[in-house]
Amino acid sequence: MIHPIALLASVTLDFLASGAFFTTETNQGTPLDPFVFVKESRPAQNAKSEAGPLNIVHEAGLRPAMLSDDGAMPLYNADGTQLGVSLVQWLGAHGVAQVSPAGSDAETVTATFYGLIPDADYSLFESRIEHDRAIFTPLDGTGNTNSFRSGEDGRAAITVTVPHLLTHADAIELVYHSDNQSHGTSPGNPGYTAHPQLVARLPNP
Image (cartoon, rainbow, N blue to C red; front, side, top):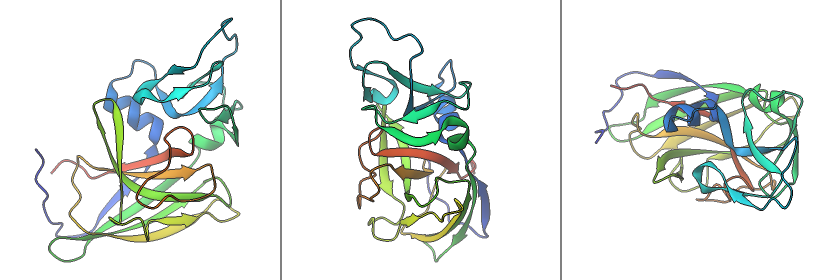
C-alpha cells in the first residue's frame, strides 16, 4: 500500500498518451489504446461483437487502435461512431501539470494542454486499473470543477483542487467526452462516450 506524503514543493508532471501508459501498466505485448478503435482491414465473415482490453465490448469489424497503426486512420468509438479525428491527431496531444501543496491534506493541480480535439469537452479524473477494469474518480472529488472545453486551437488550461494527497498509485487522466457533455462523478461509458487521451502520474517517493 502506498501511503500519501504531503508535498513540500511543487512537482511538474508531463502527460503522455493514455495508450502508452495503459500498455506499460498492463504489460500488453502490442502497444494499443483500449478506448478508441479503428476498422479491421479484413473483417472476418460473421464476426460478432467482442470484448477488448478492460472488458470494453466493441462492434464487429472494429479493434482497439494500435499505436503503430497508420496515423491517417480515422478513429471510432466502440459502437462504430466516427470520432472525427485521426490516430496521429489523437496521439499528437500533450500537456503539463503543476502539482502544488494546498495545506496538509490537499493539493492543487494546474494543467495546460495542447493539440486537443478543438472545441471539445474534457474532464480530469484520477484512475487506477483493478481486476481488468479502469476505475475513475473525479480529480476534484465532486465532479463539479474538473471539466472544461478546449479552444478552437486545441489548447486548454484548468486548475483543480484535489481534496486529498495524490500518490504514485493514482494516475491523472484527461478524458475526452465524445458525446459532448461531462457526466459529473462519472467519466461516461469507457470506449463509447469516455476516451482517456492523456495521463500523468506522480513519481514513486
